[in-house]
Amino acid sequence: MESSLPQYHKVVRLAHRPTGKIDPPSRFLPVSTEPIPTIQNYSKSTAQHETETKVLVHRLYLSLDPAMRGWMSSAKSYLPPVPIGEVMRGATIGEVVAIYHDESPRSDFNETTDTSKKGKLKIGDIVSDFSNVGGWQEYALVPERSVRKVETLARLAGNSTVRGGSLPPSVELPLPIHLSILGTTGLTAYFGLIDVCSPKPPYQSGPGNHHPETILVTAAAGAVGSIVCQVAKFVYGCKVVGVAGGPRKCSWLKDELKCCDVVIDYRDMESAVEGNVTGKIETDASMIYVQKAQQYQKLLRQALKQVGSKGFDMMFDNVGGYQLNETLYRLNPHARVALCGAISGYNVDMTSLSQQQSPNIISPTALYMKHGMAMISLRAKIQGFIVLDYIKQWGRAKQQLAQWIVEGKIQYQKEDIREGLENAPAALLDLFNGENKGKLIVKIGDRITTSEDGNQNEPRIIASRL
Image 1 (cartoon, one colour):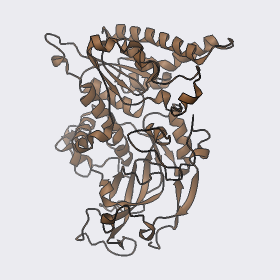
Image 2 (tube, rainbow, N blue to C red):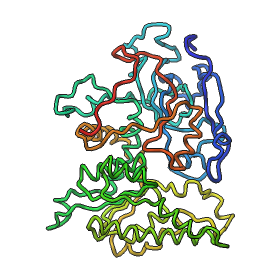
Image 3 (cartoon, rainbow, N blue to C red):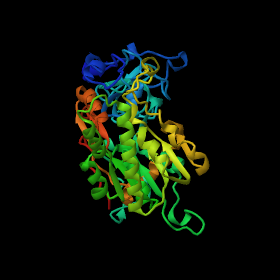
Image 4 (cartoon, one colour):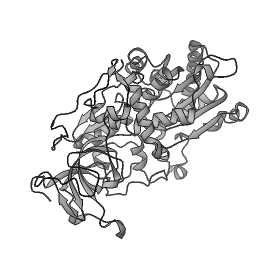
């Protein structure tokens, strides 16, 4: 290991599998100090990879996502659970600080890089890492093939323009945007809306029908939901009904982003329901759940009346529970429902429900079929999806998202950034408590290499909506 690099770094490993909230977070995700990984202790998974190029990445930003709660569980999912004692998984943006060809290091800390050698990356390159090699650590030694150099806006948006002029090649994007709009967050919104919901422009919405389609987006103020709302509104001209918690988030969607025609404040409704039963004896969770569902149904009816629609043509769901179930009753014929997440049930231990058999525990999927029979007569489609299914199309999608940023159809909002890897566990708890605004990211550290143009400072931020 090069002597110019630190000998130790911070690491967060999964210590216990939570059965409810990850509270206190330090119990489940303790922070430790460990030696920086070296090529000598690198664990080779297969013999055929013994001589493949590896890169030592200094991680700069870590994405915090609802899916992490599922990875902490032992329940079956699209990715295997994070093993107890292993580094917590997460998508990151980092800088290449050392490269190993045939286990021979090169680093700008002790010699000049020879770019004629095999390998596509150089010291100082900024890369995105969606591999399974940890994430919650300051340094990681990973195969070169598992990381990808981040693109400039000029390369992504091509001949698009900024503020009506030619796009200068020097314009760069803020690094966190590669974990938000141009990362898996934006890609999830893109494929869930465009591929699963399949919105139709107003002139294609039906024979002789020039009315825009209507979409409902749950967790609309979240990182994914807010992008879905903007694309639905400003690209496809949809009538957008968002669902969010609290007046601040509702105002942000309607008055600042201006991407929702109507916003339902579910938290205000839930507080009213819970206030009505405070102090009453033997009021169990199932009765409160039913009352919330009934009140939510009224709010859906009011929202549809406000936008002048009979029902919803699309739903992009991030929540599950009664918000999903009650919306099924308000769908139009041939409606499309994209199941992206179920954050209302992420803190429910689904692996132990069968043993508990408690009437007070409401599964996020327990009432899905209340209106399920209506799906047959409506010829509606309900489809779950995972962004990894579209990995071969990520490049095209990122180009389109970048173009929409330049055109002002997606407004770049500064992410909710928390400082220090040691604060990541508490920040993840904030995510599930709804105490974030937009995309939640942890800044792990500052750059220690020099960028290609010799500037060690952060790239400047371009204009938001034009």
